[in-house]
Length: 145
View 1 (cartoon, rainbow, N blue to C red):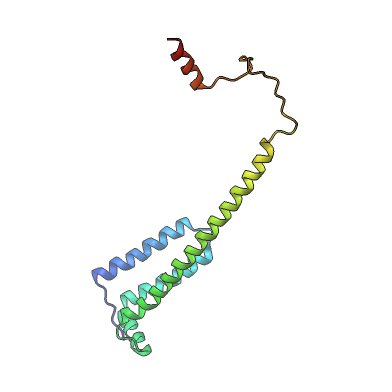
View 2 (view 1 turned 30 degrees about the vertical axis):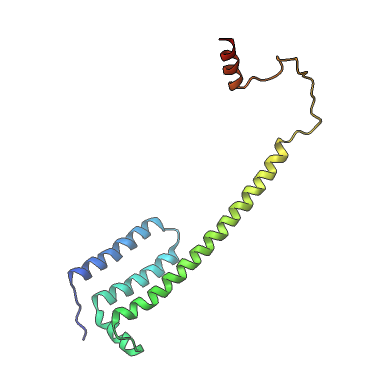
């Protein structure tokens, strides 16, 4: 019969797993399948934390020296995979946003462009029809002084 190794580190790690699950349970209530998978993985992790002999025996069975290595090897592989998938998803999202902005810009250009011919009634001597820019007012004021 295996003996549980309840150390302060084991208590802290299992507490962390419980807190993470509780946080995800509150924030991810709509995704029940993900929560179920997470519960199974966290329960397995808690089991290996409290009963490290299980990890040691499994490691020796598959030819790995230490139980912690048995846990770390697949974890590192999984983290590298997640990193690569995340990078690919981010790149795809950037491409989608670029296409969306292009589509919005071309639609906006069609809406803003004048439909008919532009009338040029104002002559260069007709100053009343031109809009004054904020800079022209200050230029004119500085010239009169």
